[in-house]
Length: 296
Figure 1 (cartoon, rainbow, N blue to C red):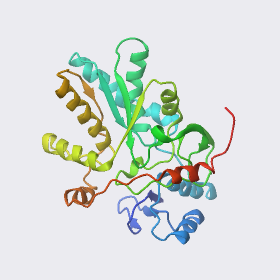
Figure 2 (cartoon, rainbow, N blue to C red):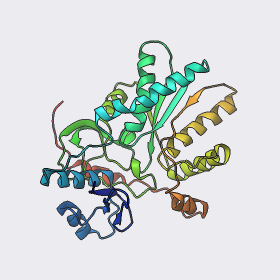
Figure 3 (spheres, rainbow, N blue to C red):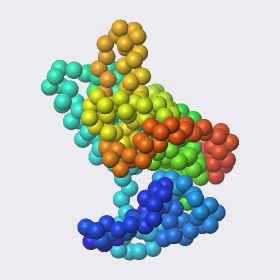
Figure 4 (cartoon, rainbow, N blue to C red):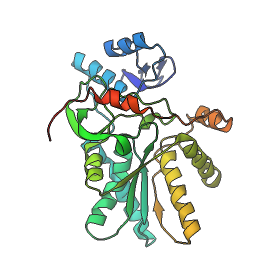
């Protein structure tokens, strides 16, 4: 099997998969017209998940032999991911526990929905009553600062419109290390349950997340990827609040990836060079100008 893949926001040259014969291109790339247009505007463009999706869709549209499957955001992906939450329910049942608080990192929504949806089902059925909390980056606060309206799932506007919380498909998130959370929108299902008040959402800066990641690595022996550090930081906040109040709580989260390929980010944090990137509010306002105005 041979093919090529665009990787969002990767500051690396094209490289090859020696096993499968694939080529991987940093996005925005020279492979697509859209990618080339962005690089022409800014050779150091930081990219985003929305841009990588646009490039992947553009590749698939022009070649009848290409099939494209999105790995996040879309509702069916979240439903497939619920195997995570179903397994967590069984694990907790074996030790006779139910969560008081569930926290999950949230970018497009697949990791969060995969963990949270089975627990939300049990909550709605009256079997438990956990607080369910989405945790997103302060540099890309889709739920906490975005608008709930119809928008494109990709930057170029090639996908169907979806009703979701969005910062605007033209929004380019700051280049934080949690690349998997740098997405302008949110899954329609996650957006719906947030709009209905069934879940909460908070945003946490990346230095606090990496501080939590080091605590976790030193205590558990696992180096987490930058994305789940957001949930770890939220879990630590909750644990510290319990320490202060004397209250006991069962806090649940899911570690959705290891950080073995993110050691450069850890080095930057440990050297004191990592900064929390402030979100310019005018960048959201500018991006929202391109969002279609559709009733409903």
